[in-house]
Image (cartoon, rainbow, N blue to C red; front, side):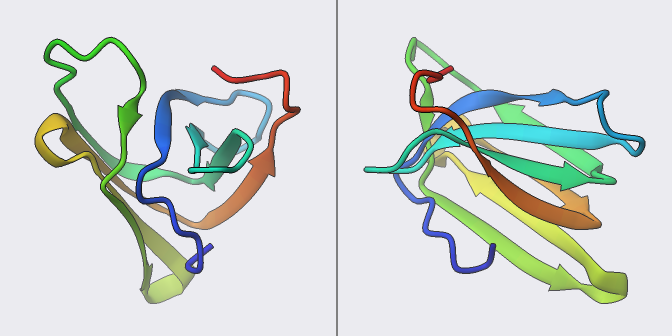
Length: 105
């Protein structure tokens, strides 16, 4: 996951997936020139959302996404949307799930 280059990716949103036994945050994103993907974040905690769509009606575009290793095998994830805000949280486990090419949002 730390090798992902998600600058200039379309952010389609997030949701909590109840199919997992632990609290699982799903973030849907379409990296530049790549299919839509979901970042699966098990035991996501300390979620901070600060998004301002202003007059923007399309998906927000990421400026940078960073993944930092924490003690106890946890991760700190930070999505930077420049002047549109940010998302940050911690998670025990991260995985990428590619979606069928027919799904975009």
